[in-house]
Image (tube, rainbow, N blue to C red; front, side, top):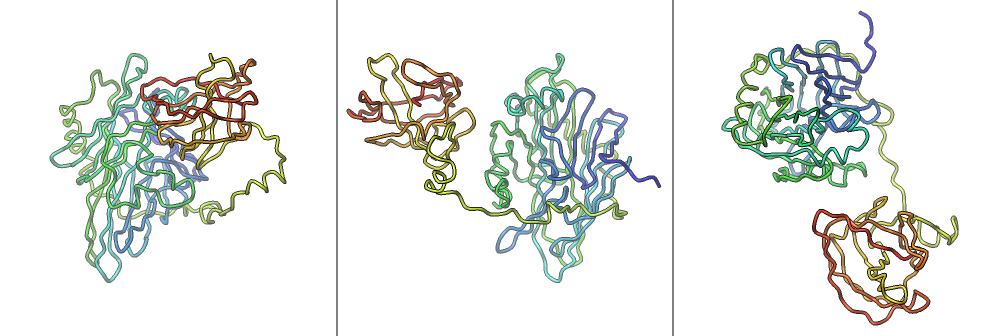
Length: 432
């Protein structure tokens, strides 16, 4: 048999096309000119699309079933994807099948308790969603996410299902999917923030996976992701059970999602492939682990202020800081001197070109070295030596401070209210 060149591509008569990497991660899922996933899966990191097996005991343990951190053996060919392995005494199989009669993809598998004692387990399916042309997604994933609308619905058999519509038209069409469980879902999430939080980037267990249940709320931020949590399963010794998840695709859904769309869940459950038992035998192509996935992240220490000065000097520009960032904002440029200055200490990250004012605390200060605490966009105001900074919506109470002639001595503190809770991004001059 000729070895496959990865990613392996397989498709259904209904037009669904899947590309799978050698480690079992999904590189991309498409239907003609629409790509479903927001990010491409890779051989190094896998991808956001995954199924997680969790074991509930004194604490929650979790393992991904796809990608380089999966404990399973992976088999990929032109007919589909299959994974088989064992983790913490639980043997598992997993397969991805594309239905022939409709644009439906199905994740199906089995779990078997190989241990001596009963275990309580559940599964979580995460699917990042763009539902947009490939070029638009690669240009700006965050922008595409803002137009993806999630509507949680309750199905009599499947429990929670998510109806997901791309509100930004694609060639006069609004692509739409429904994601659900072949058993019964007990909770859900609609944004990667409610699954991963900030833990994953530090090599820790995703915040949503370490909690007994997902948030179960409709959150539409900039990280579009449909997440379905299946009902827990108690496995006695030697017990084998089936599990599965489905996705149904519609090229054009003219109206907003509604309870009437629950009919698509019924249709997904009725396709022939949903009734088939998941394959029990998987011929091994190879393990999913790589050198990168089998090694822990290197923990490091932050440099102190003195060490930064020793190594890089004092003339720093475009400084980004986390945890209690100090920012000097010119809020009234029309005043005679350099205006009112505000120092904001906040505990949210300073991104490349914005500051989120959701968590602002009021402070009184005597001196501020603005050069060290402001990250400008680059549009300078020559008269006051100011740069323009975009401030995201949110709200907080801050303190206005009159500036002396040297622009560092602050006096006459007075509280002011700063609200930016509407959809606008406010340009505010910032002293540099």
